[in-house]
Image (cartoon, rainbow, N blue to C red; front, side):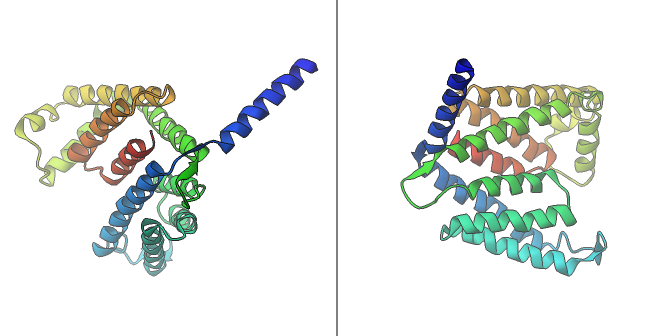
Length: 251
């Protein structure tokens, strides 16, 4: 019993120390600005191009409801960017995007946004110091994202290169500006399989680097390589930009 009491007391002491620990506010402030800027750009482009309003009905609901929610999300992101009442606007952005994600588009990118905005709402945004635990949670979140994504890619469907072959083929057919040498490489299943294995290894490595708290330049360099490839070869932009910003500001 005595041993258990000592262990419980030690765990509680360490937990209390962790929740009371503080970090400089600069990195948190930079991530708040970067996160809000990236997703504000995304939502403004989405509204300007009417990307979610091309059909009259989505999921049985009029797109007017969705458009109204998007305008509210833009407002919350602008408030988060400005920094006045940042905690309120971070939580508002989380709540509004959660409604959109649950009722209209159950996209992993939107769920990532919801979780990240909710964690951002735990910072104070009122001085030179911030609590350390939300920063740590954001780093654990990033490690889990890379680990879970890599684990899903251990399937034969991914490692065969089939998914990438289809994606590359579609983008090539609509005129995506691939260099000729790259177009030739991804026109074969074996070329796509090699890229699939590299992506798998990179994501597992990045998850491990975050767990062991590797130097930021190593973490950010690998993340920039992975997401940079996804942006320019697979046309996947905003999620990658947000993850790079998260690691660059907080790792």
